Image (cartoon, rainbow, N blue to C red):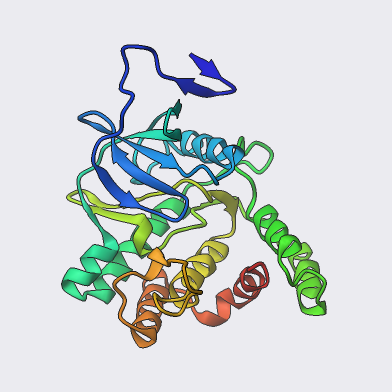
Length: 264
C-alpha cells in the first residue's frame, strides 16, 4: 500500500525492527529481517527530507559505485524509514579507532569519492537530485549570517561560478563509509547533488577538518563525524592525507570551502 510514495506494511510483512546497528543525529539503523536494514528517522526529522533521501537513493541506485541498494520507503509504527539491502562491513571510524591508519582510511575514502564523482548527469535532466549550487545558496540564505556583507559576497560569488555535472555525495566523511570485503561503500543518500568535484572535495574536507570533535561541541550535542579521531592534529593530518589522495590542494577548494562555512 502506498501513501504519498511511502509504503505501509501489509499484514504479513515485518513490522518490528531488530537489533540496532548504528545511531545517528537524525536516524538510527536497525536490522529488518535477515537480509535488510531499515534507517528509521527520528520524529523530529521532517518527512519531506525523508522522502527526498529516498528519491536520491533511487536516482543513484544503478550508478557504478558502491552503496547500499535501496528497497523501499516505509511508514511504520516507529516512524518513517528507508529499507536497504544489508551489507557486512566495518564502519570507517571503527577502523580508524582499531588501527590508527589515518592515511589508509583517507586513501580508501578518496577512491570511493572519485568513483562517485565520475558519474555525470545531463544538467537539463537531473531528476530528483538538486544542484550543489542550490544547496550552497539555500544554506547561506538560511544561515544566521545571511545579512552580513561577507555572506552576501559569497552568494554573489556563487552566481559567477560554473555549475558542474558530476554527482557529488555532499556528506562523505568516515562515519558515512562502510569498509567491506569488496571495498569502501558510501552510506547516506541525504545530500547527493550535481555539481563540480571541487565542491564535493571541499565539503568532505570541511566535515573532516572543521566539524567539532567530541568535547568541543555544545553541551548536549554529539558529533559522530569525528568519533575516534583523537584530537585536532589528527584531524588535520587526516584532512591532509585526504586532499593528497584526491590530488587537490587547499587553495583549489578555497572558494567552495568559504561558501560552505558561510552556510553554517
